[in-house]
Image (cartoon, rainbow, N blue to C red; front, side, top):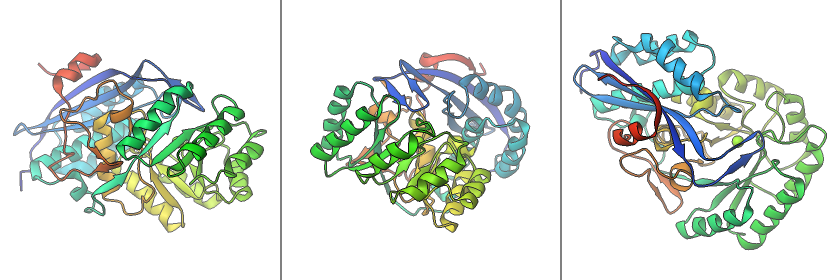
Amino acid sequence: MGDLSQQIIGYDLWHLELPVTSRRDHGIGSVEGVCEVVVLRLTSEDGSQGYGEASPWSVFTGTPEATYAALNRYLRPLVMGARVADRAAIMARAAYAVAHCTEAKAALEAALLDLTGRISAVPVWALLGGKCRDAIPLSCSIANPDFAQDIELLARLQDDGVRIVKLKTGFKDHAFDIMRLEYLAKHYPQFSVRVDYNQGLSIEDAPAQVRNVASFNPDFIEQPVRAHHYGMMAKLRQMTDVPLLADESVFGPEDMERAAREGICDGVSIKIMKSGGLVRGQTVARMAAAHGLSAYGGDMFEAGLAHLAGTHMIAATPEITLGCEFYQASYFLAEDILEEPFEVKRGQVIVPDTPGLGGKPDEAKLNHYAVSKAVAA
Ligand SMILES: [Mg+2]
């Protein structure tokens, strides 16, 4: 066992713009050209290092600028000079040191867990309660406004053994959504299909469109209306037998409590970038299970470092039963930032068993893609 009483003496940051290979349209906005993430590196007295990634999206969780400022200005003083052992105390203070900025808090906790795991020579899943699975089924999103490109992606997914797709809907028109559902039913009947509106429907259109989409019997229909339209979510849930998932409506445990009380969903998408960390993500999953609700391992537009953090959380959380969507490192980014590729085999994300997060970024890539950084000389 390494020495967890040592202090954290290094705190380096990179704000990255990572080129992407295709356009992604979601109900609430689009990503084209690049996606932006912030990487944090902590160093302890013996030279051990831990990394964490924040993956904000301005229309969903927050901006990369706010994330960078939260980490650089408001969270840094809580961490520098603190003991590695005091992760829970640091996170408790971080919760109130800056409002919101859940992606920054997720990056901080991931970096603290990575550092602790590397010093202690245990994987992060061991620090989160132990492992309940060795692999996690992968879902890849179909979200390109040019469906011809997604038809090529579907063939690649088929070859790679991926058998879950999530159709992003509600960003163009209803006919486009129905056409793509018909295509999937005809050409890929072996695929498990999920539908995600990302808040794309108006409350006027939602009942009829959700009813039509439900006739294709997807695994679930996710977040058809705006995050705060709890009443309409509850109404849509009553209207259809297809499970309704909440994503943007439920960030952390506080939202989960209200969502369960108001009966807005049958399940919830859990993302460390929404919950503000892995431990709070586990809390959301356990609250959902206690209310008889299912849980899915969602993500933002992430690089492989954030995928690794999510993978360890799901590996240690039996309540998250619907797989994950950590596809961006393999199917979206022009180049991931990890030294070794994020491991996906036959449609399953492989849970690492090596210390910490089980992978780290290539520093040359961090410096190459950085648009700003705060790195000690
Ligand atoms: Mg979603």
